[in-house]
Image (cartoon, rainbow, N blue to C red; front, side, top):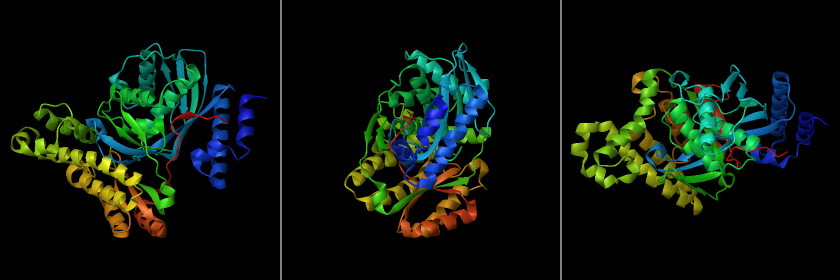
Length: 429
């Protein structure tokens, strides 16, 4: 029997335990996912004419605690979610990687040209080239392969579509050429390195780690080359609350907006530099406050406010983890709201000053507070400046909350998610 036909028959049984782990046990959802994988395998067959394929999945991530703390070696609380990017892939015996992503032009990466190129910044091909380059530097085998990719992690949604794509590529190379021996944390570090050096974006390491490792985790980046990843044993399903991510849109790709995003880690580090350190993790809030009169003359006030946010959210992660481990969900929710206020007031990543009339996130947070105050939690989600907000919504308010937000942002913009236990993986079906 042909490989694709065999995979389709196995998936068609409908009781695949891996599918249940990734997508839940709703039969209609499982059927939709089956159809999705079958369509992608057929697309691969018609595009590349090969049959000996493997299946891959990489989740998006939700940041639960620690907003813009990772790039200054702080702590985060994050989880993999059930929206994912999937791939059908096979080696092609050449030095060329060929990738066809649904909705995007097919592209190729030549493995004989392994240098970063500024003209390729902010492209998928740059990410693939960077990942292949770093894996080779780290001693892994790298070869040409063909892949069809289909994504359900919305771009610009704050669920980390780029990080999910990066660790998906890492998982493909690891499994096709290295028997899957690359550690998930190393996969994350390589993805971040590629995004920093080949894609041109100064991101931290939280997104890639959450997507690669899976489950609900806390990560301490004090030593960024060796982040400490700790699983958190907490079942959100038993709380009676839904995790809802709302895609509010907004955000811009122009130079001013890129500079606005890049200013976050830069300004935080400028405060640390005035205290003789390279990142804020190496200084205390007390040291910052003590030197404010001298620091503000060099960095400006916004940088100091962002440093205050970092110190607060970095400690808040420790307290949130403790609350979850003690099954004190109400204290956890209170800290989610506190984190959101800190992001808005101090970190100032809810709207762009260059596009001040467009405040989609600010409005979404105001609407969320109207529905949830005293009963749930809401905050900016991810990088900010547009994209998504996060809310923990009591089950009896879910319909009202979704109706209120989708009245403004459109039908289907609210995503009811769950934390999935698996990170970027090859599917064993």
